[in-house]
Image 1 (cartoon, one colour):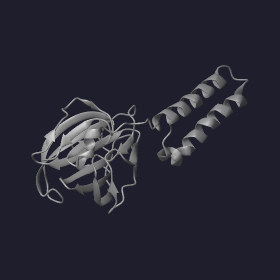
Image 2 (cartoon, rainbow, N blue to C red):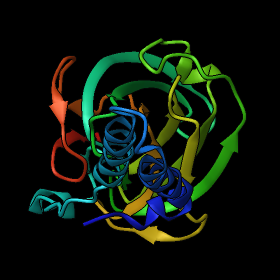
Image 3 (cartoon, one colour):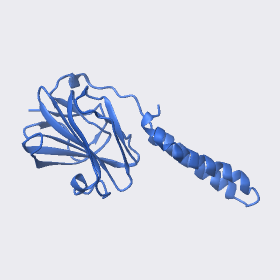
Image 4 (cartoon, rainbow, N blue to C red):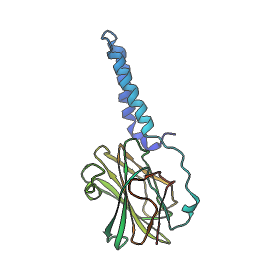
Length: 218
């Protein structure tokens, strides 16, 4: 299935279609029609593949408010200790997930809870695996609470990803695994949890959005 988050990128398909059609206008130039047809077809195939939205099955453990699932596909880059004064109010741990252009880019809620803020921040476009990108890059900043505590998660652009879709609504209650947006063409997801949280994943591990158990709140 193709996600509806790709509808505003219809221009990519139009451009690719024009390339393929243009191939017919250059039949007198050897090999050029084949090149244009191939290029247009590759772009169309990549766009359809990139905006795929495969079915995901949220594990039954996620019914517990203490359990977090991964909000995205990708590879865990690092797990570091930070200070988070705004919502957690002190020591915290940050789990950073890198999404390559080959990963599914639909994002999902990491836990059951209510969104207390959902904000957009302008910024730079450093490589998503650069630790500085967590603070300096363009991003959305979402805070969520439930009966077990509070977390923050951030959709962060990368060098290629220049478009963030965030549909998280302040004051609305969500279930773990529910879709809330997409990052387009490679990016980074940071999840910030309170100190004392049990982390189930480790650096270098690949995770799947809505399916991989990420952590348990203290």
